[in-house]
Length: 229
Ligand SMILES: N[C@@H](CCC(=O)N[C@@H](CS)C(=O)NCC(=O)O)C(=O)O
Image (cartoon, rainbow, N blue to C red):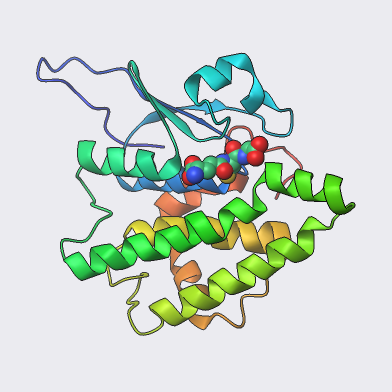
């Protein structure tokens, strides 16, 4: 969370960005990684999903769909991690997440959207609770594991001949931000065995050595419960 504050042309420091988020939320985790990579200071505003704070009238004014993360930049309010990442990318072009090469950029969108559309939504807290209420306690586990396997299998095939040190080359890019958060969530919450995914495992090792990724980990946030390792 370190980095230079953003200064206006009058050199007065501008108010910090606020990130409404939750330590364990993978969508929040993505945005924390990008903020750290770009060296943007922000205020961490915790929203406890287990206590349903995301359904409060105050929070729904910020994001009518009731999900974290939400970014507040002075009087501009933006929900959805993908939208936030694109906003940050344009407003803070340092350490770009989108490669200049069109094909690589498109590959980043594809990998990010496999995570953001075909894996994470199926393991979202609301979905998990709904499935368990309809089908019985812990019935969500099989469903989530199915979609993690399907998504990771696709990502492994997609990236195995294209990855460098990072997902789409030797520079960190958008796909890495999505992958790091998704792999962490799959392993920690659903005990996913990463052995069938050697490329994803290798990328995950690179993430775990990078301070911007380490500072963004769910285990390192101000609202992380003390009992969590
Ligand atoms: N497409 C949205 C999805 C946001 C989302 O699903 N957020 C989850 C946490 S990762 C959430 O707030 N879940 C609360 C719930 O399901 O009630 C994004 O990328 O920001």
